[in-house]
Length: 178
Image (cartoon, rainbow, N blue to C red):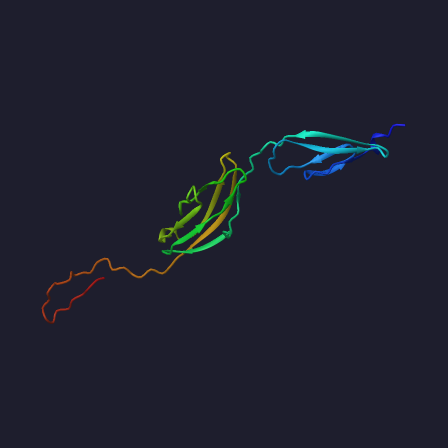
């Protein structure tokens, strides 16, 4: 007497197997692998039959991942330099290309470094989108809020009136403007 299909037991001991249900073996690959065979057994309660099938996993471009510890909000001060290195990884590429959408600074496209010294004109809040792009055009982005704090600037003397070296007569009132 033949064993009903729903009573067959399939066994497969391979690291990519994530489940066996009925006559279906489910595999999941998270990275590319060389072509290889998957060995399996079918057992009907009395007899075992071995089989195999070939698998060829094709590489898929995964997006890069920004893996930096840059906080989502950064406080910087006018006239003080700020330097940071942002980190990113990509499974297929050794390097990612960096870009930003701000006039506050330019990120190094190759290295992900940024360095700037904000001026009085840049005091305020800046929302900056930093993007990592891989060679396949896939991206990851992080939005960072930069707050440039104002710093009290010392007064600047631009001119003195009357000019230095002018002679005055004794007893005359002289007024200076700074």
